Length: 341
Image (cartoon, rainbow, N blue to C red; front, side, top):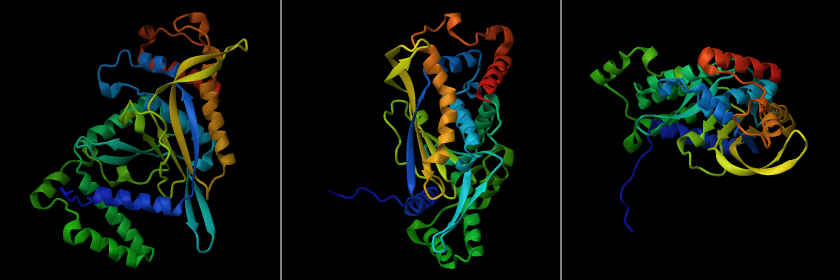
């Protein structure tokens, strides 16, 4: 056998490898598997997108699930926190937030991954979420990943110095500024041209700062994926991470409104819920799971054995052609809000 090539880590891979190593070294990960039955959600999503003229306007299942997860986090606020923990002194503190910032890994046009911070998703509508993600995607096309990651790395280095981590800082500088492992960034006219792009048209370090929770969508990258994403790392100081898989056909026991049980092929979206056991116990996660159940179980119980398209089988029928997509969404969200709250 012969070695065919060597590929040294770029700055993005350096940051990811460092953060994931710290995560698995320091954090005791606890995992809960959740199976979301989306059989009856998918037609609703399709109906909402019936009049969309472009891909960017479409509300995706991923966006719907982010909305549902955000509602679940409101019911379990300790899952939307940052942990400060000193192992030597055995001191810990959870920082609670009045907002939900979602760290979401996204695929860039060049095939590399970048985790972006979707800010203030706690009260955004599905349309507002969709518009936000579309704008991030647009700006990502004008973004030099090395430049924005270098800005983040520089901030981390300065923070480390302020915290007295001199040895760590010096080691990182040597690792990124010397030899074959040197990080290459823009220079001269290329750098000037890049930074002449307005910040509203490119991603900056603020767009990839740490969120309050991570939601990764494996299923959107590979729709043929089966099973669960089980080994999902928590990025400190966050205490929770979620991995959404691809929709899969699975046999499910369905109970209709008369109590009759049948086995049906249902479309299941597997969700891996990972939390930091230093900060949370399973009891802290139960309110989140119950909130998720309240938004999915009604589909099992009500639609079991029913047929799509028969009006008396449904809680609500709206002719979206009469009201338009925006007004239809508002009506549906109002009904869901009344049911949830």
